Structure formats: structure tokens, C-alpha cells
Image (cartoon, rainbow, N blue to C red; front, side, top):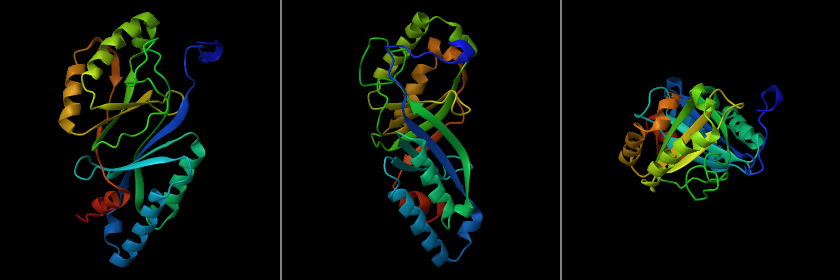
Length: 243
């Protein structure tokens, strides 16, 4: 740590690149009581904003209807700057549907190469700062905070501990991790997201990670969100109860 708590950049580390934002929306029941024609018009405007986001924004939508209390859909965005992410959210809030939406949960982070990889280069966890969605059927999202004791360990010791973590992850090539670093940007230290084709595949991975040494240094890893990938229109239809 540099003076004043600022972290010095090491020559062997890639600089942070790209913002990642997970916004979980709750649709108020009052919207479902409006006349069908009014809801249809509002739906079209909202879907249009999602299907045509600002330039530089990568966007995916997921449904949580019946999967999590208090939120019906997720908008996952990735961009190299914060301004287009803000512009998108302003468009969503400013449309006819915006007055009936609450943001139930919100997480912001940035991508960066994991410092625990050392000289080990591969296409897996933490190796790239510009990862893209693989569009698997499910996304599992949760914030993550380490115990302070973790940062008291030497870098060599932390890399040793994380080596076991990476090796277990390699047993599940069908699960793709996206790590957002949030310290200094949002309330959490990390925001983790995992793409998988089935919930069972991710459950088995988490099961295998539970007894690892790294897990002893976990302070927080909730709330956890199970999100089903759907197009923007379908995400809103499910939120409205249009099965």
C-alpha cells in the first residue's frame, strides 16, 4: 500500500479494464393493474431501450421470476466507461415503465487480471480483463467479501491457497466465472458471476469449494441470485405475469 492507502501498480499487473454492472429490478404490482394497451406501449418502449443500448454497452437480461423474492429480472451490462451505463439506466427510468420499477439490488465492479495467477496464464478464472458473456442458460450472481485476515497473509501464501481454488474450478470447464472487483467503487469487495448450463453443475462446484482453505477467509457471500437467461421482451413478460 502506498501512502494514504492508495495501492501502487505493479509492472506485472494488467490495468483495470471495463466496468461491469448488475442491476436487479422489481416491478411494482400497480403496473399489472393498468389497462392492457397502456402496459403494451410501456413494454415496447422499455424493450426497445434494452434491445438498442448505447454504443459500447454489452447487455444481457435474465429472469428471476419465481426464483428470488423481491426482484423479477436482471440487466447485466459491461462497458469501458461509466457514462453509457448511466445513459442506459436513465433511458429505462425515463420511460413509461420507469415509474413502476424499483432497483432491488445493484452491484458495480471492474475487470482486472487476478494477482494470484502469477506467471500462470490460461483462459480461465481471472486471466482476462475483457471477458464476454458465453450466453449459457443460467447466471449465478453474488457479492463477496474476504475477511481482513486474508490480506494479512503474504502474497506467496495467498497464491498458494488460491492455487487449490483454481484447480477445483478447472474440474468444471462448463462453468465460466466473471469476477468484478468492487473495492473502492461499491459497498462490496467483489461481485462474482458464474455462467452454467444447469444449476446442478454450479451447485457441485460450490460444494467442492466449501472445504477448501480459501473458504475459511470468506466473510460474506450473500445474497445469491439464480438467474435464467431470456431475451429482454421475455424478461419483462414474465415479470408482468404473461406466461
